[in-house]
Image (cartoon, rainbow, N blue to C red; front, top):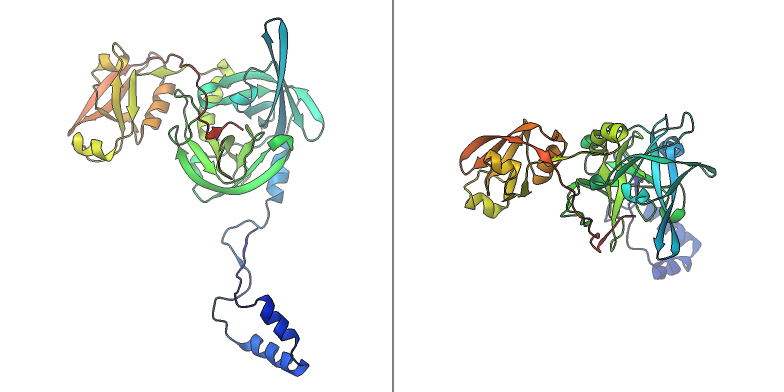
Length: 373
């Protein structure tokens, strides 16, 4: 890895066989001519790709001790029978005091959680916080000081950057794969995991992610976590998705302190502004979140927000997309009076909205094209 090989055409089995039948002097002449001739195509030595790492070995060696194999047991009843199931996944220590990050779906419904460090150091883990809408869970391991990986800045990660995934695909512990960031800002429309209440802003990567990788770290070249491996495209090879670590960092204080995230809402359904909406509503561009539905009696209706308004700013934050608005509103706080700006045709109006508490949505099955590995 890290080298670009330049190959040449024009030598096949027949021409090689003919060269072997030549007389020694003739072969020497042919070799001399070949050495001095100018080839018709490109030629030259192996050329290093700019900024490509020669190896990921040092990075993997530093990060791997903090990555754990997660084993879960689920117990349930069917009539008079007790049903016992099991599951596996990945996780990583982000705080040396024993705080571990993984996906919520890895530990969901588990009655017993065990984590394995290295090849044999196994211990119990307890859930101290979880958030299903972002698929994040925080575990605690009582084991003294542990190796940890630092949390990086996913906003600074660019499409085309090298990344490394470490996890336990198919139970093959501490598997390291490498690739690049293929895309960013993949939404629920792109990755249909079935939960319309979820908050999705995935990093897409071609670093191999498979069943068992869920909850493992996606690392940048500094060895910092920029994402949590979460989902894969079931019918494709090397299309995986990771939760940006900056989203996780916003939730960690609440999860560690309270064990959950209490979310606020405005009482509107929003969507992207389409080109047809720009002309229909006399807008200047496609920025913002288009109001498709206003809940009767909800906070937004009371504040005067109307159908076809476009929210362009919330509490001083520009709104480029509906996903950004949903995220900011959800964390603003129940009972908070928030200021938003809406574009209504050529007008920009200011509205004050007292946020309510977001009701829970029923769970749905993931789209068959996507899996939670």
